[in-house]
Amino acid sequence: MAVPTLDELLARGVRGRRVLVRADLNVPLADGQITDDTRIRASLPTLRRLLQAGARVVVCSHLGRPKGQRVPELTLRPVAPRLAELLSTGVSFCSDCVGEEALRAVSELEDGDAILLENLRFHAGETRNDADFARALASLADAYVDDAFGTAHRAHASTAGVPALLSDVAAGELLQSELRHLRSVREPVRPLLVVLGGAKVSDKLAVLEALAPHADALAIGGAMSYTFMAARGEPTGKSLMEAERIEDARRVMDAAESAGRRLLLPTDHVVAERVEAGATTRIVREIPEGWMGVDIGPETAERYAGEVAAAQSVFWNGPMGVFEIDAFAAGTERVARAAAETHATTVVGGGDSLAAINRLGLGSRITHLSTGGGASLEYVQGLSLPGVTALER
Ligand code: ADP
Ligand code: MG
Image 1 (cartoon, rainbow, N blue to C red):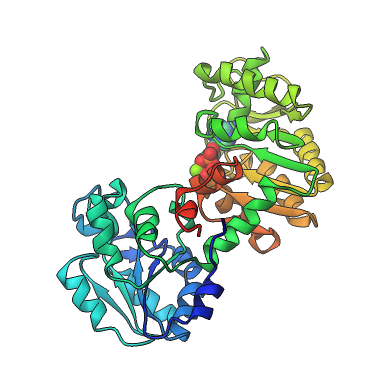
Image 2 (cartoon, protein in one colour):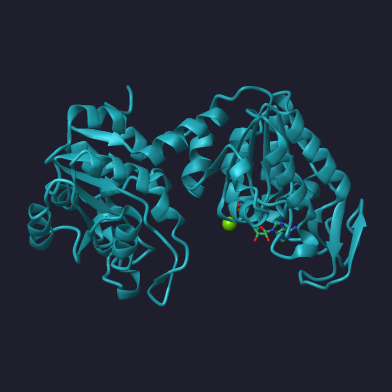
């Protein structure tokens, strides 16, 4: 079964038809001001094409976690003018995403008009994938486009319920681009190198278990490496370590070994007495009592950079150290530069990993920056995403 594309929907003709677009407009807000409009910008290509083709575009999204309540701070209202500005066209706003008011507002649209609906999660039926709520939402549209990759791993009313009710559906540009690039991790040109870091093994256990036997090499950095080191009986000092995950780490190492894959751990470390700018640091092979690991050491950074350079496909999630503090950022920076320099396909996911790449100004030199943290991790593990399955025809 295939997922219909936006091109196919446009070829069938959308002029005068109401097209419901599930976008991911879950932007950070502070005092009602949008502090980062990356997600709004990412939704523009699909919206532009639909508007140009004369569709009556009905945009919906969630924002934050209002848990079925009308939380005034989580209104999508401030997004409408920003969307209008970026699209250079008017975008009206409806203060409810279903019901009389929404039906009336949508019926007043003309060809090439856009309307943004209020936060889907103001209704509890959204995350519960309630049948009545899905029907109410679907009644606003003749066709449906999913472009919200970040929520594709959730079977919610707007991602799974609605496409089950409408026959004419499609994946938007952003969703398609995410799937295309992440497929290069699922079905890679080998060798595939996976670099995993960040704070915790527990956050990424499923992806570790799935990718350890799949990747040709798995390089581990960040705080999660200390749990792996503990599993090998190596000292970790005061480093962040999850004692209750040592067994899991051992299982991941065994899985890699029985599949004949390489699992790489740091062989040197930057340690500090405190996680604080200005703290005294040392470079060590063995983490001393009373010190904590805050970054991979220079030798490890060089080795991981060499692995990146030798791979044909690279998937990276999670920084190599506490990159937010300059003195602990060298390992993350070295790996990021290697990823920017290689001609291999490079895919980076994870909020903090993207922040690290962008801070170095290397974003444009990475093949694909994945916007959907949880969804990208689930997809590269080989899981099917409910939001994508719901589009299959
Ligand atoms: P992402 O958002 O890219 O998925 P994570 O959220 O898993 O990444 O992890 C990022 C966090 O991990 C950062 O805040 C970073 O400071 C922290 N981190 C990385 N290495 C260490 C370490 N050695 N000790 C403590 N925290 C670390
Ligand atoms: Mg994070």
